[in-house]
Length: 175
Image (cartoon, rainbow, N blue to C red; front, side):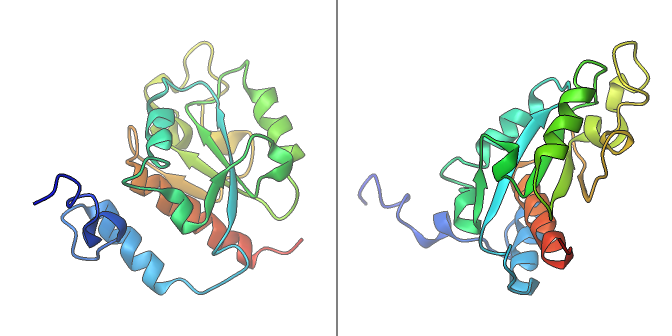
């Protein structure tokens, strides 16, 4: 067996519904059932760290790793909110990041969707109600949230699924 045979096997580039990983199984079932839409092949994503401990950002980086490869699902990360369809917010919203989150959301064109990624963004997490956190820290207290991806941190495949669900929501929104 050649040392690269494992890398070239079909299992490295496919999503299987019978995978032992529940996040991969859920993603496989979602991909099989989703209808085609303008946003099913290309989703531009902008990420904002609202005050997290960088755990979600590390997992978000892994969505671009060769094993997950979110680009094969049409997900692309962009540097400007003006180019983005989906905004991913991570961490509890700190007082100092509230304005930046609002400005990023307002800079996005319509239709747009927001994904709250991680327990901090969804519930405020351990820092809910802390001194430097805005209200309870939930993103939905600052901007409207379309999809919540819980976890501390959520796995890369869970983040991909959240972005794809946001793309499906975008296909139903009107400008």
